[in-house]
Image 1 (cartoon, rainbow, N blue to C red):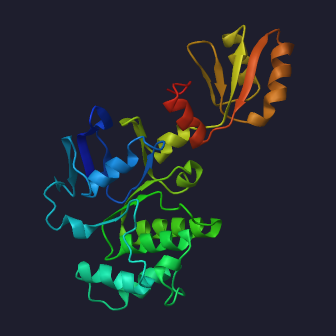
Image 2 (image 1 turned 90 degrees about the vertical axis):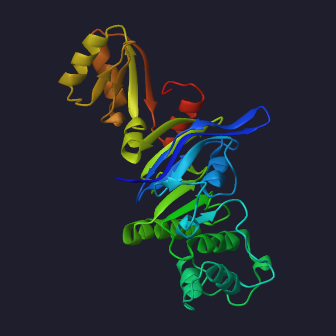
Image 3 (image 1 turned 120 degrees about the horizontal axis):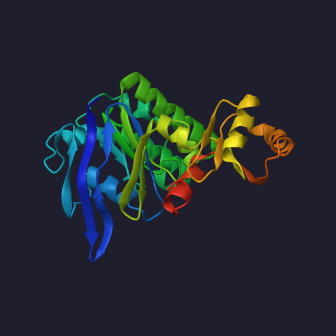
Length: 304
């Protein structure tokens, strides 16, 4: 599958500090690419460069196979919500969208209302945007990014300020656009459990460096819940577990055994080890979440 976005050793320096250090990401057509990282990790800097809002110090990037610093008509195929949504606070939402559509050369007079309905602002009326709540402003920013049905949409923390129903609405809209129109998304979010509900691939950034790029399936495998078992006889313990019917176990080089199925049988395992003369040194239930995996990865924990 072709890459819609590709960066090659993309680097951005501010003085002696690296905001990005030789970052190479690959976003394929039709993906929902989740960009994960702490505040200041480099996510927004990467998005700004991809969207033409900032220039790299070194390296390069490509959009639709073309050099990103030579955009041509690329800008019309790219929508974005990064930091400031870029609305006029003295106008209502529909007027803001009409201005955006005019700038894009869109003459369909129904397009602003379609976009407002899509993000749940169809009943906003003539209320000035300056009087909107944070959640309403965020919805309008997403609508502005979606104007003209761009091939790729870049959204920086799009669910900030949204209530639970708003988060569900935006998630369902993104999934629907990907399915029905083949839209590609790059989305950053600090609410990682929410991101994991719809992202199809991930790039994890820490301190300006890309430390991992993987599919949602690969990440799910790494985030599996499991029992970690340490005993005085790894081989003997593994044999006992197999007789108990555990099919998904893995003996690590340090002798620890990871048990991936039936985590509720932790008490039964303890009794079985004792009954077979095996001493249990430690047994821990690990609940797999993307947050736990991410924290272990960036803090040099067991998954690093």
